[in-house]
Amino acid sequence: MIPELAYLLFFAGLAGIVQGTVGFGFGLVAMSTLPLWMDIKEAVPVVALLCLVVNATLTWRLRRHLSWQRIGPLLIGSLAGVPAGVFLFATLDPNWLLVGLGLALLFVAIQQTWFGASKRAGSEVRSLWGGLAGLVSGVLGGAFNTGGPPVVMYVGVQSWSKEDTVATLQGFFLSTCVLQISLFVARGTVGLQQVQSAGTLLVAALIGVAIGQFMFHRVNQERFRALLLIGIGLLGSSLVYKGISASLG
Image (cartoon, rainbow, N blue to C red; front, side, top):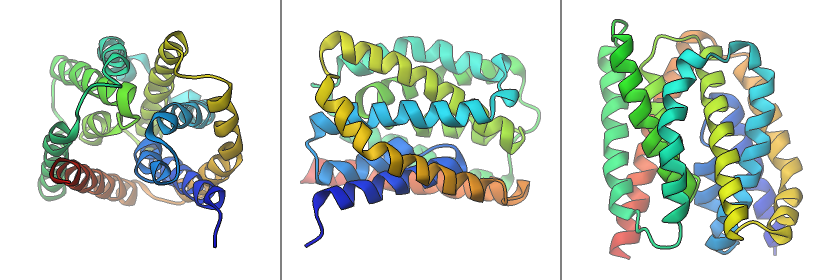
């Protein structure tokens, strides 16, 4: 019989591959799998710690592509979203919220696949939607480590290069992780046990990121965009299924 640790290492590595390839998805993949072998109250802070290191690694590699103009609206929204998510961590039932969000992601993936991204959205509109995406992402990320979809939906319709897109995602996720973990520490949610558990899985996660980065540098612009839209669709499908199953089960 395969030991539980082997499963945890495998899925931590898989989450790293996804993150390294498309720039998002570590938290969603990890939170969809690790709780099968780890209590949910343990999994959330452990995955948050892993996300911190993974996002810091990718942000450093893409630091030349970071831009306050792109990331600023997202961060402003997250300043309210992350504390709200951490506060609601123990009480919020996210099931039907996840269903609605998943349907929205599926709509965006289909719409963008058929009609393409809008290239002429005004900067004021982009900032407004960026702040909203950061707010919703902060709530979901602070509570469940699943804050990627709203931000991915926002950046996915922009006409940025793949490096700019992934750098924006990593910079945003790193900032929200720092805030989330700081609040967890203040509330006593993160302690030595969670740090040790995260440390056990960290090497597997970083190996996964390295594999994903190898794939990232070999995907051209058109294929990258297609891959990003496929990722959005898969995220949406996963959230719909997860929300409905939890609500009916």
